[in-house]
Image (cartoon, rainbow, N blue to C red; front, side):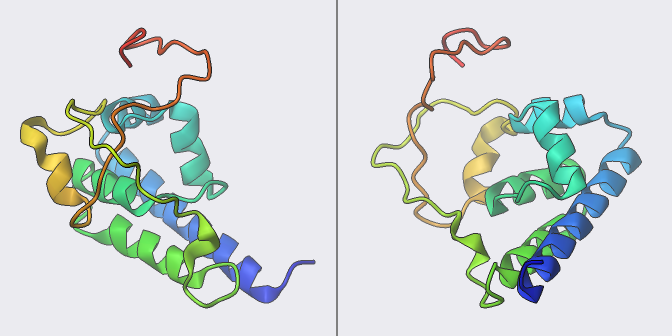
Length: 144
């Protein structure tokens, strides 16, 4: 059995997932539709809804905006991050340093008019491209 803070952390991510599912259903969208609009596969949305995958804050902001949750999803994500694996609010150490180069093109599912950048923390630098791992995006081909 793991330490109690890990159990609390798992519970808060499940709570986030429950809220995400409620807001998605309220919006009348499928997991695939939500995934396509935020640039994730439907299986990733399923994992978020089941609480088996942590949600990055920028994604929580995009989901909150897409589903017009009025900050509910963002609050739930921040609460789960605050738990952290050791209860210190460090959020599980999943933060990676930003890439050195900024992207210029839109992300899949990005709101029109460059609204994504307004959802990100100040001075956020996004990579020009993601690693390919030898895979081709079924939606965007080699450009995706």
